[in-house]
Length: 466
Image (cartoon, rainbow, N blue to C red; front, side, top):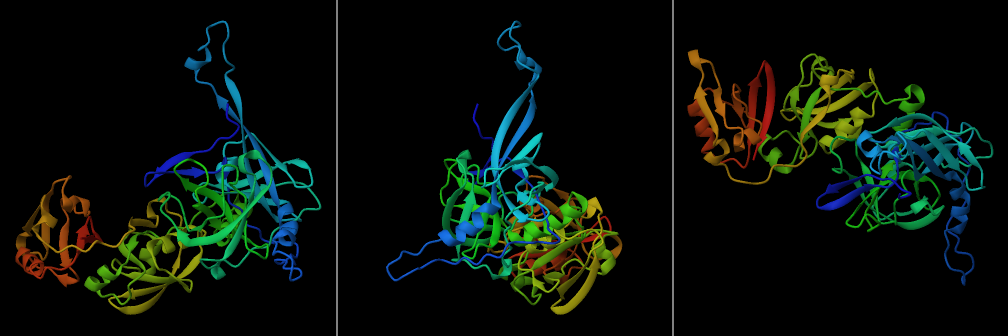
């Protein structure tokens, strides 16, 4: 049996591998990191530059993690070798990963959720040879972060870098336990910031690096040249399952936010705003003229949600939250998802081009999640009747303004755009639609895309159709 367990999924034709056996989230309320004075040592004019002084101060904070898990044997396989030699009903499996000490006085260690998920026992090996049992404080699958505690003295902890100061091209060093070989150091640069899309259900804002990351590195440290923690190594994209120069780390600001939840509650209780959102783009802005080319466009506000109570409306464009720019729907979803229930937040919104500030208190209604309805800007295609092939439109009775959707073929382009039977189209590209003649007249203008204001079950929606 292989010594390592790890999960594999396919992303754009390549394997996406989590690099160990668990993901967890941790937040430290009182960090007590050691002072790291080491810099790159250039020594004399004849000496080669070296990372050794920095690493000598940093590597003691990175630990090896070993886990055991119980796996119940399927009954039909227990007697595969015959009735005289049954397999035990429960088998033990082992896994390995890495972790980072973030609070030396409290013995707090961050690792990945997938490293420790389902573990019966967790042991931590320190650089000085000590092997200690660890307790799981809490774990969060959605960010792949977990928090452990060990009872030990003389620990070294890493200070946190400032995530907002990271830049593409910064040098970074990955420290971990690849293939269970023991502590290993590799170096590279930050290749990209804000990577997402590996799992749309999770909260992602990855740092991409070309520092070599392999199986067993999960939960290990990505540090800058001052020895400060930049991120927690989590995954790679590879055709072979081994390093190909595309590795990902959870950024330290996301790690710190999750740590706070886990220390306080043992879980992440996410606040909910209660909207559907999508990315805004230059092409959508050309049509809607909201006053910005980036942001999170609100396409639906759920009834009795935090957003509705605060006064947020369909077609509002959120451009900042708590004074931090919102450049995409992911930015807003991450900010809300990492905030707690009953947390107050301030949204900066453009409504019909006018700036507004909206104060909102998040709730925890499961049906009122902040979800993306689309991550990509609409592709640039000219309008034609094919947009509505498969949809039967009709005038409404008794002079009611709008256009009714009488039927939609589920395999049609109209259905793919979100149109449903029973919808009432009230606006097209922010212009009122009184009847089918109005609607057809607006279509003759051949807009690059269609922004439909739709009434559905008493709610107002915004559908963007290329």
